[in-house]
Each structure stands twice: as structure tokens, then as C-alpha cells.
Length: 400
Image 1 (tube, rainbow, N blue to C red):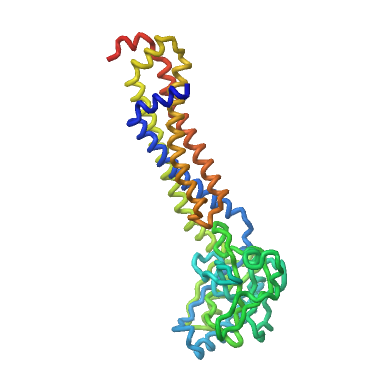
Image 2 (cartoon, helix red, strand yellow; image 1 turned 60 degrees about the vertical axis):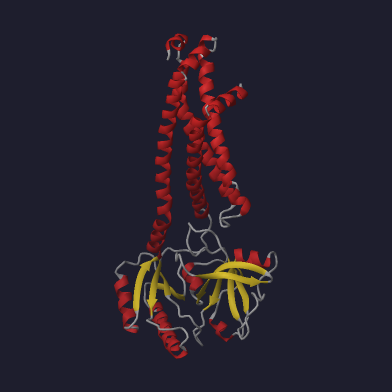
């Protein structure tokens, strides 16, 4: 029976090739959207590593011309330190910290480091001793930065667990030198490890992360671009005006922008989810068009094969047999289209073309796509196959 069905499919190879191509491209679109959806969901359910509730972000524009000007930088650092001190005195403020990069920033600092003979990709931020308190970071080993770190002859760094596993494996990273310093630079030394930290937010993939200590005495470039403050629960939005007046009073020539991290988070979600939503809409309408096209093609095939199906009925084939024949022909065409697409998409995890997506996500996207395509093909084949089963033997005799 199966061999006969394949022979029938081959005999109408030109018409069937178009159906297979439709299924092939539909599968690719559904695979792309479903894989991205599973990838985002997999990221969302992972721990974030910090708390954004009741945290406000103050962006600071010091109108600086260059971080290479030591005199100008020293003056700006003094102003920045005074800003932090004044903000911490405000009643609604529980804690305040300086940082070069803010949570939910889609940009930032990062790159590849050569550490112990390994190429390690990581992101980093330069923060002060209050950063962990503001964002509620969870320390799992060692300690966080403290003011006395200004006097160290090495540069203290805190790394997250992902980076600790990548660089040190099962070894204890506390006290270890982090990489090899360039000539004339102080060595980096690990003083603490925090839980996995995802600076870009819940929808972004997990990555290696390192914190450097922000030296304010003596100053070290670059100057912090943000002040993060943790406000008391229930702090009204009107506090923003008081905060703005204070900031402008301390640094009248600087510019400031104030936003709760919840608003920054919402903007990031909209930015990252917009392509996924758009892709889902495109995939839905594409599947709708493919479904209508499959029904049309199958209906046309049915009309052209009325004589053939009538002769089968006249030869003794039952309605069920004719129904199964037409239905399983569509299943074979669908399987060929899915097989071609599977050969293509299998190259992604095998060749590691998109390194940040794990193989399990590809597998989930493939299963979802295959289920959707087979369900679509089944629905499209039901009515034409049912109509084929109703062809009477007499119709074959008077069909031209």
C-alpha cells in the first residue's frame, strides 16, 4: 500500500513538488518563530540575579569632553561623589549607587578576554560599594566591594557564577588572579562571586558577567553614567521633582533623566517582543494561506482524478480505502516537505551557527513546527479525502 502511494505521488511529481515547497517554507517560518518564542520563554523563567522593584535610574550627562583629561575627570568625580552623598540623605532613599552601565541596557561593555589560555566572552560593569545593596545582589562566595578597596594594589573584581564556572571550573575563584594584566596595569583579583547576573533583563540570554570597582579616590576613568537609587515602598511619583531640584542644585550644568527601573523594563520588553509578535502574525497568515492553498490544490486534484477514483470504486475499493488513499498521499507530501526542512534546520545546532541558543531550544522549536504543519495538513486533507470517498463508480463512466 505504501509503495503504491509513493508511486502515485511520483506520477504527479510536478503538482506535488509545489505542495512540498509550500510545506517546506511554511515549516521554516513556523520553526523560526517557535524557536525564538521558546528561547525567550526559556530565558524568562531563569533567575534574573537582581531586583528591580522600587529602584529608580538617574542617567547622568556630565557634558564631559574626554575621559583622558585627568584634571577635568577629577573635578567631575568630586561632583559625582557629592551627588551620591546628597541623594543618600533624602528621606525616601534607602540606598544609592553609581554605575557605568544600568540594568536593562541593551548596550554596555563587554568583549573577549584571554584567560588561562581560554577565550572567554563576558560583559562587565563598573560599580561602587553600594550597588549590591541597591539591586539586592546575592553573594554566594567571598565579599562585595568596600571603600577600603581604593587602597589595594590590585583591582578587585566580583564575578557571577556563570563566569566563575567558565574560568575556574570547580576551583575556588576567591583570591585568584583574573587574567593577565597588560604592561603597566594592576592585576585583577577576584574578591567575590554573586549569583548569575543578567544585566539585559529576563528576555536576554544568560551570559558571563564581571563587576569592576569604581575608584573615586583617586579617580579612574570612565566616569559613571548612572545613579541607581532604592526608594522606600510607596514613594510617590512627586518625589521625582524634589530629586531633580536637588541634582540640578548640585550640578547645574549637568543633565539628568529619572526613570523607575519598572518603566525601563517595560520599554525593553516592548523592544524585544515586537519582532516576535510581528513574526507570529506573519506565520499565522502564512499558515492560513498555505492551508487555503492546500485545500484548493487537493480539490483540483480530486476533480482531475474523478475517473481514477471512480474506477477504483468500480474495482471494489471501499469508501474507507479511497478516503485513506487521498489522506495518506497528503501525509506523504507533508513528510517530504518536513524532511527537507529538517535537513536544513539540523545544521544550526550541529554547526553551532547561533551559539547562544541551546540545542534543547532547537529541538522544542522543531517539535512545535512539525506538530503545527502535520495538524494543518490533516485539517486540509480531511474534507477533500471525504469528498473523494463519495465518488460513485458511475461517474467514472461519464467523466471526460
